[in-house]
Length: 256
Image 1: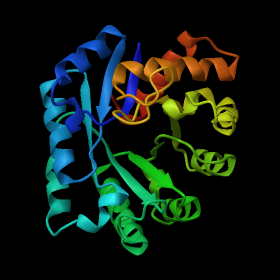
Image 2 (image 1 turned 180 degrees about the horizontal axis):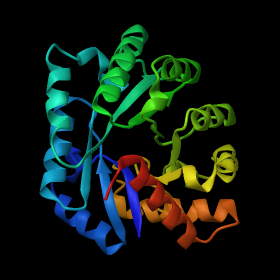
Image 3 (image 1 turned 30 degrees about the horizontal axis):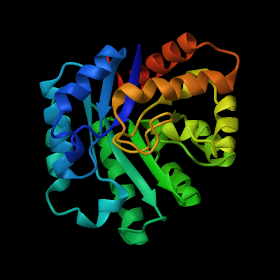
Image 4 (image 1 turned 180 degrees about the vertical axis):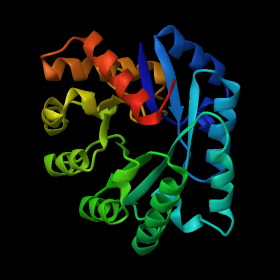
């Protein structure tokens, strides 16, 4: 059994076969799926999916790409959503200096605000960071993010970011990127992460792992991430990786 700790099940690319996608995940031994909010509308959609499916759990929050879209009343809406059952984390939130879809200063302000809201709601954080390592870690430290903890999702940073994240008490989640031929440095980092701080995800519909690279990703494919993680670590079977990542994900997100 595995858990896909980060999926976007509300994505339009699943509109024609979402139920089949969930059935394939169950058939592949995926015990639970965490579907992610990236703005108010997708957070509401994630909550609705969690309420409709017993093995789906939801998060709420605003992705750095959408930080400039936050309007008056959004945070009150998130407070209301957080009171619904099966809400397990706040995010994904963070900083993205690669695309700069939102101005960097606004990203930083909204990141701080959302960490504070997550602490108020006692929800762990799901962190997105791209080409913004120093600012991400600084803000997490200054805002006391270690009080709620969480996970750096789709980890693709360097060894220093891995160390900083672990020192903050966060977990590292690896995606299909781990299976890519050119991800040698990432696989080297994955070898060093303590077993009790590892998680796996798809980030579907994006980043499909080998052998499905370039195609639409889905939760059933998280098994390929786990298999690669077991291979590169060399000191554990797929069964031990699966057991550890399931236990870790349940611990972070308080999934029963």
